[in-house]
Length: 235
Image (cartoon, rainbow, N blue to C red; front, top):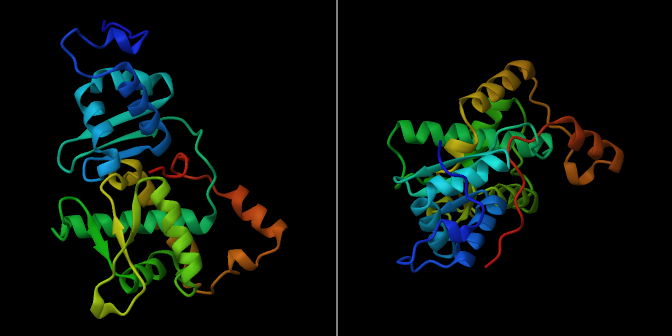
Protein backbone atom coordinates (compact mmCIF):
# COMPACT_ATOMS: atom_id res chain seq x y z
CA UNK A 1 0.00 0.00 0.00
CA UNK A 2 1.39 3.37 -0.96
CA UNK A 3 2.37 5.75 1.82
CA UNK A 4 -0.09 8.53 2.51
CA UNK A 5 1.36 12.01 2.52
CA UNK A 6 0.74 14.11 5.62
CA UNK A 7 2.78 17.16 4.68
CA UNK A 8 4.30 18.38 1.45
CA UNK A 9 7.71 18.25 3.10
CA UNK A 10 7.33 14.46 3.21
CA UNK A 11 7.29 14.48 -0.59
CA UNK A 12 10.50 16.42 -1.05
CA UNK A 13 14.05 15.16 -0.72
CA UNK A 14 17.17 17.03 0.26
CA UNK A 15 18.09 17.23 -3.42
CA UNK A 16 14.82 18.85 -4.53
CA UNK A 17 14.92 22.49 -5.53
CA UNK A 18 11.13 22.62 -5.12
CA UNK A 19 9.77 24.28 -1.99
CA UNK A 20 6.71 23.23 0.02
CA UNK A 21 4.91 26.43 -0.91
CA UNK A 22 5.44 25.62 -4.60
CA UNK A 23 3.50 22.37 -4.20
CA UNK A 24 0.83 24.10 -2.12
CA UNK A 25 0.37 26.73 -4.81
CA UNK A 26 0.19 24.09 -7.54
CA UNK A 27 -2.44 22.12 -5.62
CA UNK A 28 -4.53 25.22 -5.02
CA UNK A 29 -4.39 26.26 -8.66
CA UNK A 30 -5.23 22.74 -9.85
CA UNK A 31 -8.33 22.53 -7.67
CA UNK A 32 -9.57 26.07 -8.29
CA UNK A 33 -8.85 26.30 -12.01
CA UNK A 34 -9.44 22.59 -12.65
CA UNK A 35 -7.24 22.43 -15.77
CA UNK A 36 -3.60 23.52 -16.07
CA UNK A 37 -1.88 23.82 -19.44
CA UNK A 38 1.79 23.74 -20.31
CA UNK A 39 0.98 26.10 -23.18
CA UNK A 40 -0.27 28.77 -20.74
CA UNK A 41 2.74 30.67 -19.35
CA UNK A 42 1.03 31.47 -16.05
CA UNK A 43 0.10 27.79 -15.52
CA UNK A 44 3.20 26.10 -16.93
CA UNK A 45 5.23 25.84 -13.72
CA UNK A 46 2.32 24.40 -11.76
CA UNK A 47 1.42 21.96 -14.54
CA UNK A 48 4.98 20.63 -14.52
CA UNK A 49 4.96 20.26 -10.74
CA UNK A 50 1.71 18.28 -10.90
CA UNK A 51 3.21 16.09 -13.61
CA UNK A 52 6.44 15.55 -11.66
CA UNK A 53 4.67 14.67 -8.41
CA UNK A 54 1.57 13.15 -10.02
CA UNK A 55 1.23 10.28 -7.54
CA UNK A 56 1.11 12.68 -4.61
CA UNK A 57 -1.26 15.13 -6.28
CA UNK A 58 -3.49 12.17 -7.12
CA UNK A 59 -3.76 11.43 -3.40
CA UNK A 60 -4.75 15.02 -2.72
CA UNK A 61 -7.41 14.87 -5.43
CA UNK A 62 -8.77 11.60 -4.06
CA UNK A 63 -9.20 13.19 -0.63
CA UNK A 64 -11.24 15.95 -2.29
CA UNK A 65 -13.37 13.50 -4.25
CA UNK A 66 -11.69 14.29 -7.55
CA UNK A 67 -9.90 12.32 -10.25
CA UNK A 68 -6.55 13.54 -11.57
CA UNK A 69 -5.65 13.20 -15.23
CA UNK A 70 -2.17 14.08 -16.52
CA UNK A 71 -1.56 14.23 -20.26
CA UNK A 72 1.80 14.56 -22.01
CA UNK A 73 0.44 15.25 -25.49
CA UNK A 74 -1.34 17.59 -25.44
CA UNK A 75 0.34 18.74 -22.25
CA UNK A 76 -2.19 19.47 -19.52
CA UNK A 77 -3.52 18.13 -16.25
CA UNK A 78 -7.09 18.22 -14.99
CA UNK A 79 -8.99 17.43 -11.81
CA UNK A 80 -12.52 16.11 -12.36
CA UNK A 81 -15.10 15.63 -9.57
CA UNK A 82 -16.16 12.02 -9.03
CA UNK A 83 -19.46 12.77 -7.33
CA UNK A 84 -22.48 14.86 -8.23
CA UNK A 85 -21.20 17.80 -6.18
CA UNK A 86 -20.98 19.93 -9.29
CA UNK A 87 -22.37 23.39 -9.75
CA UNK A 88 -25.63 24.06 -11.52
CA UNK A 89 -25.29 25.70 -14.89
CA UNK A 90 -28.07 27.32 -16.84
CA UNK A 91 -29.46 25.26 -19.68
CA UNK A 92 -27.74 27.47 -22.25
CA UNK A 93 -24.37 27.16 -20.51
CA UNK A 94 -24.72 23.39 -20.37
CA UNK A 95 -25.61 23.21 -24.06
CA UNK A 96 -22.73 25.50 -25.03
CA UNK A 97 -20.30 23.23 -23.16
CA UNK A 98 -21.69 20.07 -24.75
CA UNK A 99 -21.72 21.53 -28.26
CA UNK A 100 -18.12 22.66 -27.86
CA UNK A 101 -17.25 19.12 -26.78
CA UNK A 102 -18.96 17.71 -29.86
CA UNK A 103 -17.13 20.12 -32.17
CA UNK A 104 -13.85 19.24 -30.50
CA UNK A 105 -14.50 15.54 -31.07
CA UNK A 106 -15.34 16.07 -34.75
CA UNK A 107 -12.25 18.17 -35.45
CA UNK A 108 -9.93 15.80 -33.60
CA UNK A 109 -11.30 12.83 -35.51
CA UNK A 110 -10.64 14.68 -38.76
CA UNK A 111 -7.13 15.66 -37.66
CA UNK A 112 -8.12 19.33 -37.73
CA UNK A 113 -6.44 20.40 -34.53
CA UNK A 114 -3.24 22.17 -33.57
CA UNK A 115 -1.46 20.28 -30.80
CA UNK A 116 -4.82 19.34 -29.32
CA UNK A 117 -6.32 22.82 -29.65
CA UNK A 118 -9.29 23.33 -31.98
CA UNK A 119 -10.11 26.74 -33.48
CA UNK A 120 -13.72 27.33 -34.50
CA UNK A 121 -15.34 30.29 -36.28
CA UNK A 122 -18.59 31.56 -34.79
CA UNK A 123 -20.57 30.54 -37.88
CA UNK A 124 -19.58 26.89 -37.45
CA UNK A 125 -20.41 26.98 -33.75
CA UNK A 126 -23.83 28.51 -34.51
CA UNK A 127 -24.66 25.91 -37.17
CA UNK A 128 -23.70 22.92 -35.02
CA UNK A 129 -25.44 24.38 -31.96
CA UNK A 130 -28.76 24.65 -33.78
CA UNK A 131 -28.36 21.30 -35.51
CA UNK A 132 -27.49 19.51 -32.26
CA UNK A 133 -29.94 21.15 -29.85
CA UNK A 134 -32.86 22.31 -31.96
CA UNK A 135 -32.43 25.76 -30.43
CA UNK A 136 -31.35 29.08 -31.86
CA UNK A 137 -27.66 29.61 -31.04
CA UNK A 138 -26.71 32.28 -28.49
CA UNK A 139 -24.80 34.26 -31.11
CA UNK A 140 -27.23 37.10 -31.84
CA UNK A 141 -25.97 39.24 -28.99
CA UNK A 142 -22.22 39.60 -28.77
CA UNK A 143 -22.19 40.41 -25.05
CA UNK A 144 -24.16 37.29 -24.18
CA UNK A 145 -21.97 35.01 -26.30
CA UNK A 146 -18.82 36.52 -24.81
CA UNK A 147 -20.23 35.81 -21.35
CA UNK A 148 -20.89 32.17 -22.21
CA UNK A 149 -17.43 31.62 -23.70
CA UNK A 150 -15.75 33.40 -20.79
CA UNK A 151 -17.71 31.09 -18.49
CA UNK A 152 -16.19 28.14 -20.34
CA UNK A 153 -12.75 29.67 -19.85
CA UNK A 154 -13.25 29.58 -16.08
CA UNK A 155 -13.40 25.79 -16.39
CA UNK A 156 -10.41 25.56 -18.73
CA UNK A 157 -12.35 24.11 -21.67
CA UNK A 158 -12.58 27.01 -24.16
CA UNK A 159 -11.75 30.67 -24.62
CA UNK A 160 -12.12 33.50 -27.07
CA UNK A 161 -9.41 33.89 -29.70
CA UNK A 162 -8.67 36.16 -32.63
CA UNK A 163 -10.96 35.51 -35.57
CA UNK A 164 -9.76 34.90 -39.10
CA UNK A 165 -9.73 38.33 -40.81
CA UNK A 166 -11.79 36.87 -43.65
CA UNK A 167 -14.58 35.80 -41.27
CA UNK A 168 -15.60 39.35 -40.39
CA UNK A 169 -16.42 38.21 -36.85
CA UNK A 170 -15.49 39.86 -33.53
CA UNK A 171 -13.69 36.73 -32.30
CA UNK A 172 -13.36 33.00 -32.74
CA UNK A 173 -13.48 30.14 -30.23
CA UNK A 174 -10.46 28.10 -29.17
CA UNK A 175 -11.52 24.78 -27.66
CA UNK A 176 -8.92 23.52 -25.21
CA UNK A 177 -7.75 19.89 -24.78
CA UNK A 178 -9.07 19.56 -21.23
CA UNK A 179 -12.63 19.44 -22.53
CA UNK A 180 -12.04 15.86 -23.68
CA UNK A 181 -11.46 14.67 -20.11
CA UNK A 182 -13.93 16.91 -18.29
CA UNK A 183 -16.80 16.15 -20.67
CA UNK A 184 -16.64 12.48 -21.59
CA UNK A 185 -18.76 10.33 -23.90
CA UNK A 186 -21.64 10.31 -21.42
CA UNK A 187 -21.89 14.08 -21.79
CA UNK A 188 -22.13 13.75 -25.57
CA UNK A 189 -24.93 11.22 -25.11
CA UNK A 190 -26.81 13.82 -23.07
CA UNK A 191 -26.56 16.27 -25.96
CA UNK A 192 -27.97 13.69 -28.37
CA UNK A 193 -30.83 12.94 -25.97
CA UNK A 194 -31.63 16.64 -25.66
CA UNK A 195 -31.67 17.09 -29.44
CA UNK A 196 -34.00 14.11 -29.79
CA UNK A 197 -36.34 15.55 -27.15
CA UNK A 198 -36.41 18.90 -28.94
CA UNK A 199 -37.41 17.25 -32.21
CA UNK A 200 -38.10 19.82 -34.88
CA UNK A 201 -38.78 22.62 -32.40
CA UNK A 202 -36.36 25.40 -33.30
CA UNK A 203 -38.19 28.18 -31.46
CA UNK A 204 -35.67 30.27 -29.56
CA UNK A 205 -36.32 30.48 -25.80
CA UNK A 206 -36.39 33.88 -24.08
CA UNK A 207 -33.03 35.56 -23.76
CA UNK A 208 -31.66 34.87 -20.27
CA UNK A 209 -30.83 38.53 -19.77
CA UNK A 210 -34.48 39.44 -20.44
CA UNK A 211 -36.11 36.74 -18.32
CA UNK A 212 -37.72 37.60 -15.02
CA UNK A 213 -35.75 36.77 -11.89
CA UNK A 214 -38.19 33.98 -11.12
CA UNK A 215 -37.85 32.37 -14.55
CA UNK A 216 -34.09 32.75 -14.49
CA UNK A 217 -33.92 31.05 -11.10
CA UNK A 218 -35.99 28.16 -12.42
CA UNK A 219 -33.62 27.76 -15.35
CA UNK A 220 -30.56 27.90 -13.12
CA UNK A 221 -31.95 25.38 -10.65
CA UNK A 222 -33.32 22.89 -13.15
CA UNK A 223 -30.13 21.78 -14.86
CA UNK A 224 -27.21 20.19 -13.10
CA UNK A 225 -23.87 21.48 -14.29
CA UNK A 226 -21.33 19.05 -15.67
CA UNK A 227 -18.22 20.95 -14.65
CA UNK A 228 -17.01 21.91 -11.21
CA UNK A 229 -16.88 25.66 -10.68
CA UNK A 230 -13.48 27.33 -10.53
CA UNK A 231 -12.48 30.72 -9.22
CA UNK A 232 -12.00 33.59 -11.63
CA UNK A 233 -8.65 33.53 -13.35
CA UNK A 234 -5.77 35.31 -11.75
CA UNK A 235 -2.75 36.62 -13.47
